[in-house]
Amino acid sequence: MFRTDPRTGVILALALLLPAGCSISPPVTEVEDGAPARPVDVSAIPDAVPRPEPHSKYGNPVSYEVNGKRYYTLRSSIDYREQGIASWYGTKFHGRRTSSGEPYDMYAMSAAHKTLPLPTYARVTNLRNGRSLVLKINDRGPFHTNRLIDLSYAAAARLGILGQGTGLVSVEALDPRQPEGRAPDQPPAGEPDDPLLYIQIGAFGSPTNADRLRRRLPSDLSENIRIQKAEARIPPVYRVQVGPLRTVEKVDALTQRLAQLGISDIHIVIE
Image (cartoon, rainbow, N blue to C red; front, side, top):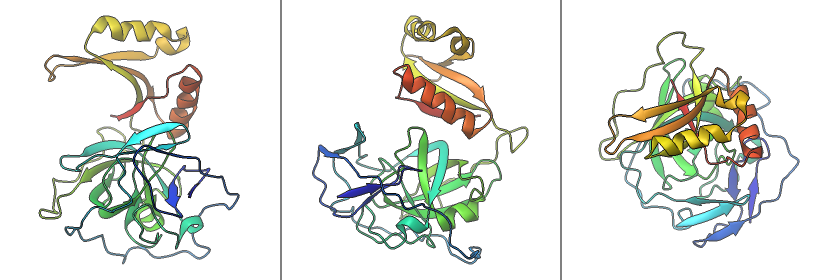
């Protein structure tokens, strides 16, 4: 049995047997999530130390379903590198079992991810301030449509996104045998607190199909669409993106509107 946080959508296992192709219908609880009652100095909490570990027996089904959407677990984390929106979770889940079977410790450097194998060690960098740390991904979530990763309380505090509730981050999976990884990402050019965000709603091999999707949308949205040609791809790919947007709140509002139009398979692009 699983529970899902109604704020972040993070799922934690109460019973960990999760066969491939299963469907999960988690109940919603009323307990609010949040930070500890007393402020905690997280500056001395060390990064996670990557080490070779076997994949969790029950945390890595071939696929699983949450809230009507199916997710497919990646077989490997090698070369995984992605940018997106991070959220965090804290007191509500502290001490409960994660999807990998470990207890959730909000004071440890850990996180939840929808598809990376459990466990995966990763370097997470705040794209607004350049802060970076290494953590262990040992849980599943967040199941909010446009969130990439759910950080522990301590990780969110160290990266400087605790107060805002969300942040823009890059996530790079690390090889435990070579844990240094690549150089941390730097904040976007321009004003560090004002990056541009786009919602990618489709990618096509044909510019005609990309334009067809653009013309499907209401005029107030289609005017804010760009079609980006990925020149490095052979054959080229035409990406349909809505934006620019300057805040996560605007991304959330537009995500909801797109869902009402039947567009829920999206990807966040940060520039």
